[in-house]
Image 1: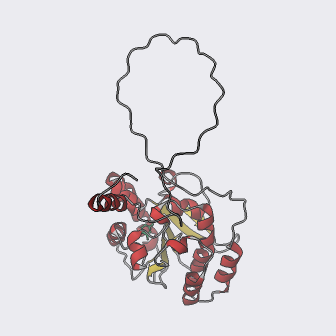
Image 2: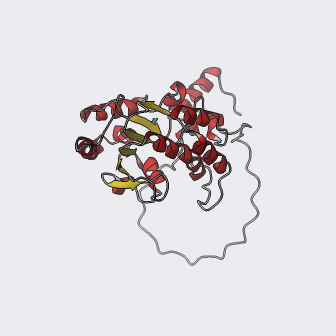
Image 3: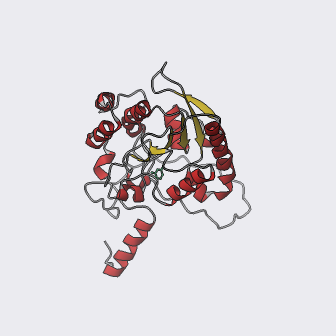
Length: 285
Ligand code: URA
């Protein structure tokens, strides 16, 4: 590598961390400056007919977006390694405490290897309202609690708008471990956490659920439509086919609202809808 002073190397590292690249993703370092392997020679191109002369174009070229690594998505039909273990462990838990011990002991989800903490839930485990977000971020991973960063503060504020707080809601995520660099989770990672989330719902018997953001909503409902289509509607949620039906409202993720504050008006409508359901008689704690 071209020589870099210690100060420059530290500045480059700080820049990477500030931009979210705060995890080493591979066991072995990758030398991105190494020469790529020689490409096989392409067949010679046939000469093209001359193109008519064009007006000169503007010299502006949009910069190439940086590459983002996402693990290859497994087909949903493919068996997920460790899923049977997750289901058996979740089913065997007869109390919330036993379930949380089982989640902490579960080694089947590879995300656990890069996470600092297993992040399960905060709030009242006896509450009748469960909010389900996406995944721990850097703050949550460090502190072992969901929604404790900026998005969490906004979520708490939104709950306050409708007269709720940690004493009458339970807040959890569709993933218990932070995906490295906050990348999107894979279907397999979501599938491995799902038996525990469903068991949490069965043990708590909530009156209402709220799904926060596209990843949580689409994964909980096995939906492919986007969150802007799904939000603001109620869905019948069942942990098992034929099981008890729990009304679930989908809304926007607080982290998205921090980036797109104009969308808060839709979240406000959704939270009011949730409040109406709460005040129309559901037992909340
Ligand atoms: N975003 C989430 O979806 N969950 C958290 O716990 C934190 C941020």
